[in-house]
Length: 482
Ligand SMILES: *Cc1c(COP(=O)(O)O)cnc(C)c1O
Image (tube, rainbow, N blue to C red; front, side, top):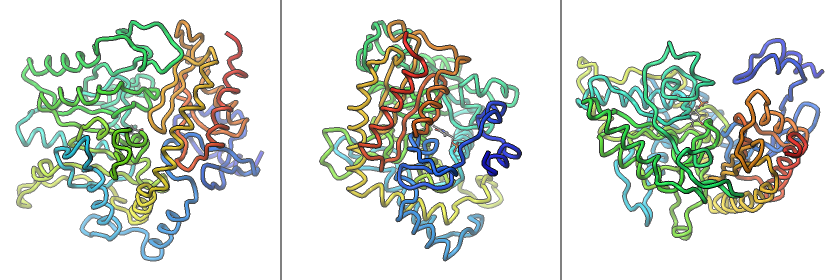
């Protein structure tokens, strides 16, 4: 065993990992990376098919991001945002505000304006900030004395206690129920397994052949109405726009978000968009009707013409290079915290590394790359390659649903596509398939029985084909014939 593997197994506790399994075999030790490729301590190369858990945008070792971090390091690594401003954080906040308020033919002027940026460190803290701000805003404005939040079934918003309180994944969350504050859940679209979808299984994304009456939208309306009848309207509606990630890469049919957001607004709730995964172009290139326009939507909410009151960003913010997050909000929320010092309306919240310079410098460079025509072309091409190549997987009887939203793919494995019968989680179908993919030089992690593909934007068509071929072979090898 590699000496570093021995050290790891002796001392490191890994996240979301059954450590008994971990200790039973030699772990892969990553030592370097370039573009979409990661290299391990034995010199083996792998394609990073989940962008290092959904964080990386433009590939590893990108010369412009590396140079920006080095340049900033020559100036200063970190000074506190408590009482001090700094250059890259100010520039980044301005840039984010511009991107969060796009103008386009489809959405000439999204309201409300997102004009203030609160920096923190990761997705969970971005949500904690939004949650605390929304809570206090609701109380101060008289919207609610005891604000309650509504989020989606299957929601995942991070692992800190506030974020877990908004989450609805029993496997992760039920153990900590006693620690949490109450929040409610409402049905989220999951066309493939929707009880209201009367369509028989087909060899296509379930969103495209579903037969329903938008009962999932009705459920949102009923939830809000019921709460209002009790005289306690929801203070906030929390959602992952276009696609729920940790729930199993579950996309929303076109139009769902727009309608759900309209209902929430109609009941006076604040909209909290968790774009930790979906932000920064992940949900794909511009729609055909605006393909030639200069602006494109880099955030998923905007593709449904929804402008939230809180926009939570993390993972891809720095291109996946450094931990940094941002919570954007409106002048109305900001103003509710203004006052004389002795009124103590201050937002008493912050983290040691808030507005860190290295992270902000990396983020500025990443955004520059993201907004370049070359990046836009790469993303459109990769989205198309994935769409074409994924078709080959429909031939496999253990592939039940293939869901693609832009540059995010979930492939749901089932016992038999004709019945949609799932594998027992204990059978570890997803884990075994991903292990077989790693044998073929492709790294990703499953969510239960869903294999996730989320390649860096620099992934070439040839590399994308290799990823999908590896997935197909791994499914055949691991799950065999029906
Ligand atoms: C990853 C993720 C989070 C949590 O982010 P961390 O950086 O892991 O704390 C929150 N929301 C969504 C949608 C995510 O994908």
